[in-house]
Length: 228
Image (cartoon, rainbow, N blue to C red; front, side, top):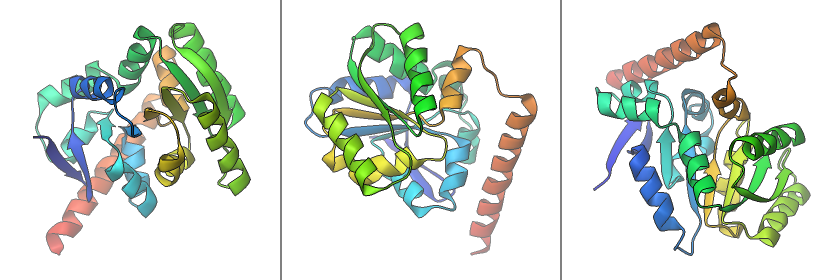
C-alpha cells in the first residue's frame, strides 16, 4: 500500500524512482490519461497562495519529489529516499524511458523560446525520442486553449511533455485533462531546471535563498498548526 505524506497541508504519495518507472510502464496499456509532475520547493511555496495549484498537486497520479529538502519538509528522516531523489532525477528518468522505447511525444511550453529550447535539448541529448509536434500556450484565452488541445489530439502522441515558468501549464492540464488524447502527461516544471542537467547551474546564492525561504515557510506553517 502506498504511503501518503503531507507537506504544508498538501497530501501526496511518497514514491521512489523505481515506483515512477513501474507506474509509467503500466500506464501505456491504460485508456485514461495519467499525470506525472515534478514536486519542487518553489511549486509547494506557490501552492500556498494558489488553491488551484494545490489541487493540481494532489490530483497528480504521481507527484515526484525532485529536491531532497522535500523529505525533511514532510517531517521525515529518510536517507534512502533523499539519496533516491539525488541520484535519480525526475527529468533523467522520464527522458531515459522515452528515449529507450522511442516513444512519440508532443512538447508544450509557455512561450515559443522555451519550447524551442526544450526541443533542441531533447534532439541533442535524447535523439531517439520521436517528437511529433510542439507548441506553446500563453495565457488561458479560450481560442488558444482550444488550439493547443486540438493540435495535441490531432497528433495523438503517447505522451506530452510540458515545461513552464509560472505554472500556467500545470493549471492547464488540471482543467482540461479529460479533453486530451494521450496516455501520459509529464509536467516538468521550469525549463530552466531541465537545462541545469546540460551544465547550466544555478548560482549558489539563488539556491541558498530558495532553500532558506522554503525552510522558513515550512517552519511557519508547522508553528501555526501547533497553535490551532
